[in-house]
Length: 326
Length: 279
Image 1 (cartoon, one colour):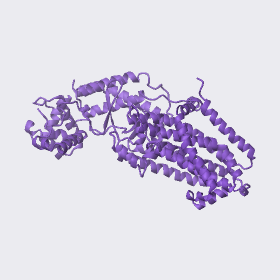
Image 2 (cartoon, rainbow over the protein chains, first blue to last red):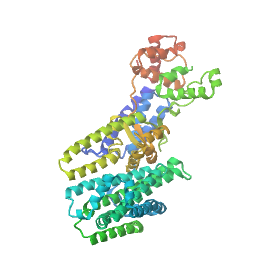
Image 3 (tube, rainbow over the protein chains, first blue to last red):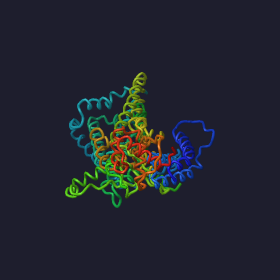
Image 4 (cartoon, rainbow over the protein chains, first blue to last red):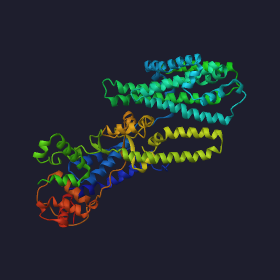
């Protein structure tokens, strides 16, 4: 059969098929088109297989390039409608947070301890050093930043309450800054883990230096009551972002029996799920930091108790959640 | 009959580049061979056209046992799409900033959250919910899909957009560009990790119909591949200027015995006969 008779025989079918795809594609987009008739889903696979067969015949007979391109495009669009990942439901989010995420953290326990060491050891070392020699803080921070720090935590400033608007502003800032840092740590991991390790060390060094300095200055109550509330969630979030990043780096550096790209792809698929959990942790931390930690009206004992409860909660969550089969 | 290599290579831009590159490489690495013998002919008669490794076509085998082809988008189109998205994003943020500063400190907090969302999640949101394309990509006719051809899902969209932070290093997508030039599908690091590619949504424009005219059977036998070349040449008439058409038809002047516009018309007549057009 020559090309024109072939086209004439099937043209109507192709047109109907294209119209059907148009409808499906419009439905996939988040527009609420009126749905009077049911979507043509049921008969799509059969029509698609027919089209595939016609395309194969057209190729075999070397019909013109324009016809082949047109049929290829139709088949591709149908392929994308038929083969797609299942849509996630909200229950999946709940399951992720209650079981999947802690399970994934436990599966990477080794990396978790490595990242904890990369973060807490410099933190402790820097904290002790700066506590002994407070002037070392100037090797990290500019004098203006140090003055800002002091102004924030000086006990005589305790009466200067932040108002609600400032709390919201700080909430926005913590989200932008802290979660952004978590994402960067994850992304930096792809450079053989160097980026992620660097971010962990850097965070450890800075947090340690600031803590050591403020402790040495004697701003103990104002500083520690501030960080007590959100510390558990934020510090754990930072470490876990490091885990997600180092997973990528390790996959690239030591892919085992997979190709490097395939290994990276698998590590990224599980790393991004860790990062989702990290986002939840850091979001919680930002909320507490903005609306609870900053409130100096709350007695110190309660803040320490809440802080301790936070640590207990995080530890129990990461060690126990999702152990029983649902 | 054998269509001369010059015609095949020059009249169909999509595949000539791969052939030229091969020719050039053979000259580079095997000078004696290249200068003593004529260059190998364009390999259409031997292999089906669709299986020749073409420029930026990626082939995708579906469970139905057919290969679909995708056109992968290169760095320039993607950079343009990114710039357009940048304008949209930062324009919107700027407008939002003006509105929200009227609300004071709290408004600034909301703006920072908006900044966070646009910086990290704007592309992922559009890629998942708007058919694989941010507004910039849509304007340039691009689209993100998985390497297996399926629409991009949340994990993949997040991975490729979080890893943007590394692709952007050290300046203006330096790492991303190096990675893109290092693999045949122009994947930046984020694409490699997420298993995604960026393709052109629509096929290139083809002049699809031959103008009506005389129909003549070709007086010489043509292999199927040669028939296809001839039909493609005739259909592309609208995209080539008359001189170029005549120049290409001249390559077959030995067979047709006709020159210039008459030669072109004769080849079209053969093409009409081959496709089954009626007068």
